[in-house]
Image: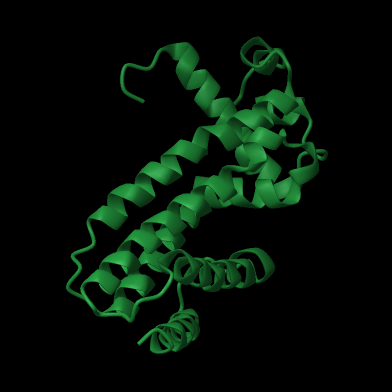
Length: 204
């Protein structure tokens, strides 16, 4: 953290420790004492920086990564060259999402969001929906341009983007949540490619 104070660094250490412990053991099974112990701090330190305790920590963990993920996706999406086929571009978009979500702290946040949904504040739980909306908008804009360039037949780009996002979400749920596998294997790539190709074929 640039120009970070000692207090800022302590808060970051507490957030990182709590995120890892919540992801590994669950929110309820992680006492504040264990979070302090993880960073070698006195028992009262957590409450000094987070007076509302674990609940405040939990919501701050979710909030902390929301904007970062959206910014990272926008930046990498805008760097796509546009010389690939539609199928290749859509697969590259998925790989951007995959790489963002499987980064250690993001993956921990994803697991916490899914498992601890009942105790996370509503405005924080929506970070996945906000990220999905941004991704869908970017894909729709890309497909709209393909229609204008007559690469695709005239169709509803918003509906097309929704279908693409459904394929992405299905793959992410199967692999990251159910199977707990973070490697983008050849099998994942083949399945994704087949599903994307099937969609695009119907749009030509």
